[in-house]
Image 1 (cartoon, rainbow over the protein chains, first blue to last red):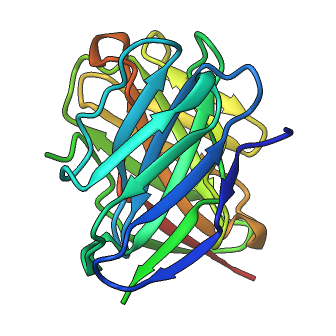
Image 2 (cartoon, chains in turn orange, red):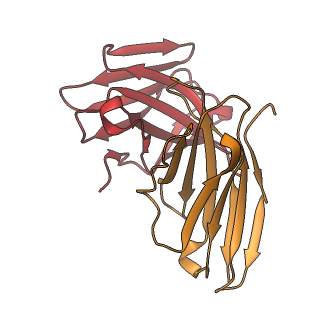
Length: 113
Length: 113
């Protein structure tokens, strides 16, 4: 596609439920990043995929968070047993090989009641 | 540990005047710096970047200055326009930091007509 596509754009869920957030990066972009922005905070790094290499998961805040990237393209971020502090905008970004610029999607706003 | 810091959460400037947004970093291994602009309900969009081998990069109304000894960079917008009102994020990366992008907490710029 022309840009990074994320879905859903908004998700409201109850505490304790699992959620899945999807990211479809720009075709040909080998690097894919997940960030989140909590209210009043900056962009917090979560996870980074680069080609077929093992992902950098160092930013995942707990073992309730996981992400996968199938076929080097679409990525899914899964949050299990959601908590209220998980409420945030989850942003996906991708970049071309060797590029130093990230292209972001519009984000998925998650609200945990 | 916040490696990229934007100490001013907000800034108001009159239309036509200069806007100066500041950013400090702590990791001397960063060698590439970027500014992103974010409108509400949209993902951040790339604005301008600078490599550590330079101390200035200009693109139209936008200029980024880098002071490596002070670990400080700034974004100048002149003349400021109402459409520049947005949140501006500073980011840093480097080969030695695993190509992760570290973002500041953002500065909300309001340009008053």
